[in-house]
Amino acid sequence: GVLLLLIQFSSILRFFVSDDALQNSKVLTSLLRGSGVRAEFGIKMSAALKIHHLVKNAYDLHPEVSGRDDYTESNVMLNYNKEMGNSEPFGGFVWAWKQYFNGDLLNREGIW
Image 1: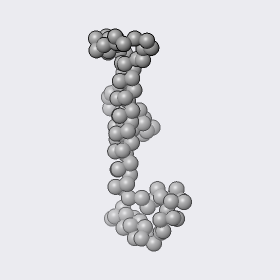
Image 2: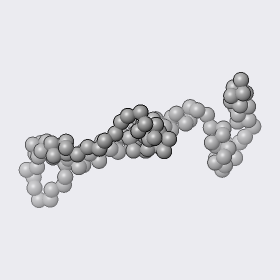
Image 3: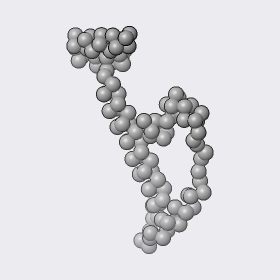
Image 4: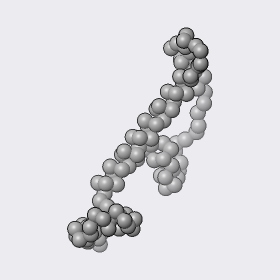
């Protein structure tokens, strides 16, 4: 009941706060910003991070070789096979909760 009352109060309060005041105050923004805005931010941040990792991995597999025009798909596959052995341990219940609370689940893994 109390949670519902707080949500209703923040929705009513949002109508009386101007957009300029909301942009200038981080406290008001965090209190009155809707869950839809937070969800959209999380989704966009996660997508941007995943695309960044994808492009970074592609650049790692396709190194720039100056003066060579014969860099082929087989060289890329060779680089891919070399990188297959590089891994880092992750996973598990405790790991997931620890990553969630310190923010690394979104910032490093792109999981929102």
